[in-house]
Amino acid sequence: MNSKEIIAQRTAQELKDGDFVNLGIGLPTMVANYIPSQIKITLHSENGFAGNWIKADEATQNKDIVDAGGSFVTLQEGGLFFDSLTSFEIIRGGFIDVTVLGALEVDEMGNLASWAIPNKFLPGMGGSMDLVVGAKKVIIAMNHTAKDNPKILQKCTLPLTGQRVVDMIITELGVFEFIEQTLYLTELAKDVTLEQIKAVTLANYEVKLH
Image 1 (tube, one colour):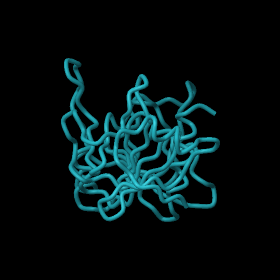
Image 2 (image 1 turned 90 degrees about the vertical axis):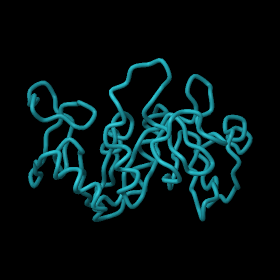
Image 3 (image 1 turned 30 degrees about the vertical axis):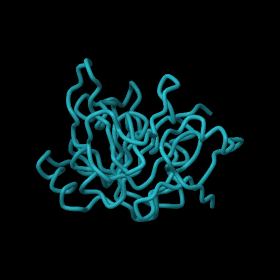
Image 4 (image 1 turned 180 degrees about the horizontal axis):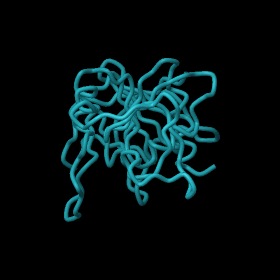
């Protein structure tokens, strides 16, 4: 199992029966593959549909049905489509229980930077600014480092998506949670040590392992 699969599988364990869940582009879309069969959740795609879906193969592809990351999917029975206005009314109205997003940087204050890289063209932040404010819980699912550079920092260096919006960070090395505005390391991944975490984490944090 590679690092992204480890992260997606662990993130899926945070979802509870009845949750209405938004999955961001990239790694977060993989979480749908690991949702426990005993729980029933509803997924939300900000580009205009909700329900449950699976990745489409060549035989079932419909060019008009793609998730927020542009991947072809097949919406399952009971799903529904809506326009962008309705989609963002759902987000801004506080109806999303959990949003799972990727990140470029997260800092020890719960600030998130996820949409801009200097001197690199990007299409914009999409719905992430709305999601981090509108969702009841914000989970960041990301690799712990990028090209060996730490991504959990004392202070974000890139333009912010939101301030003090992150509730949980899940990486291939462990789980961090913000509790009363303090960052805690609450779980280590299999065979990972505290020393390994410390070596690649620039943020200040407390250790409170479950």
